[in-house]
Image (cartoon, rainbow over all chains, first blue to last red; front, side, top):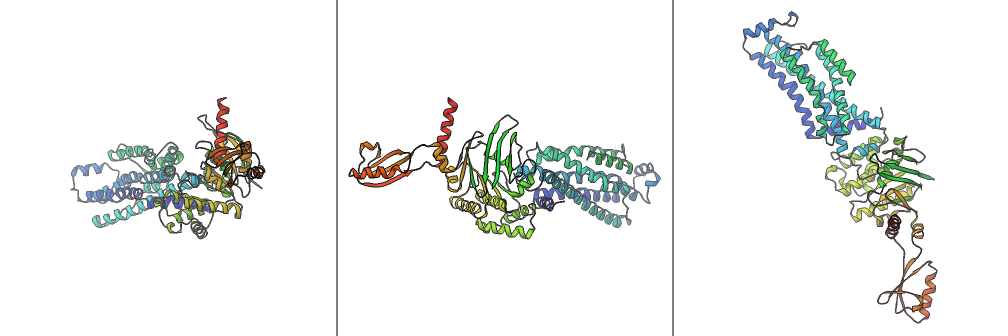
Length: 243
Length: 305
């Protein structure tokens, strides 16, 4: 890769970091999804009374998914089945914010023309910007993942006296689904960038990616579709092919 | 050596508008070429074609022997471009912007910083170098754009309205800088403007364009000869003999048309021999503005016919 492309990536990173509005959006959503929401789940489980109906419901769960106590079983279910789907909102949001700023934002501010006068091919400029969006998305996802586990495990340790290991689903989410879904978000933004007149307008197109995600969340909660590692893996492969 | 060559270059936009029609010209090294015309004449389209941002409908162009259409990145390495729409980043300071563009042009951060600071000093912007671009005035942005275009020491400089928004002092400063770049460093300057008086101050050759067609091409003297067959001679004298066919303008001020400078001493001698006193003799040469209006007027007449 040319040093000029590094310069563009670095500039795009700084552009998001110094823009208070974009930076707060990048900070607040992961904070809610990876710290606030899981904490509410864990605390609710801990303080919820031992409802006999809930015990009956838990008996329906396969033996392998059951743990020492109801608290731990519920926490494990939330951690490994519910949170991965919520987590996918983060790469979609980060990639779409960054891509909209990098492509449509430059067009809106009349800085894209100046970049076109630089000694880089259109393809190289495009590659640098896609890479910047993708890398930021992955970085935010990784930091969110690490901070989420740090907070959850600390809470579990102090409230229930045990730590829970993340399942293989997280591996699939982090290594396959997250990167693929980020690339899809970037592609959608880039495709719409020629017609979009403003950054906000451009970000709207990424909203369509949230719709299937909402369906997955609803499926998880109602039990209509339970996301196993294999389903996640298939979803990841499909997303990767689409990307 | 020819640095810019254009042969029968035409551009028709998808809507069907002919922005440029069969333009042919060439520029030599160290030349300051004024590409003049009203808004919408095709000046910016020509710059975009020469820098590879647009593709020509027909014809060809080359910058130092490189086709901008097939190798735009090589052309950009050889040329600096300042246009109204090529803006820089508001969230960065003046010097940060220059360091970024220097990096994109393959310069190391330290080298970029040094070069940027030097150019800012030349453009009298050292005090504003650490201020965010969002606080810059239009004129400061314009000067920073010029600094950005000169960062990588280009061989050809494309300037689209470089002094629009500049106060007279800054405009003079920019003019001096452009003049020095052409004279001392041999940079070819392709300057697009509709400010004819400004162009006359710094350009060595001109191309006048209207509605995508080149009306005239040449130095000021060549254009004068092409457009006007005579020049205006104004003499302030006590009186002028009627046989010399002068027209009276004001009290003691007379005007006539001459075809050659050699006619002046003959006329002066005749006035003196007639016993009249001469207070001043002025030969009014047509300005670029006069030439431009004469050309556009004759074009309109042709179209009416």
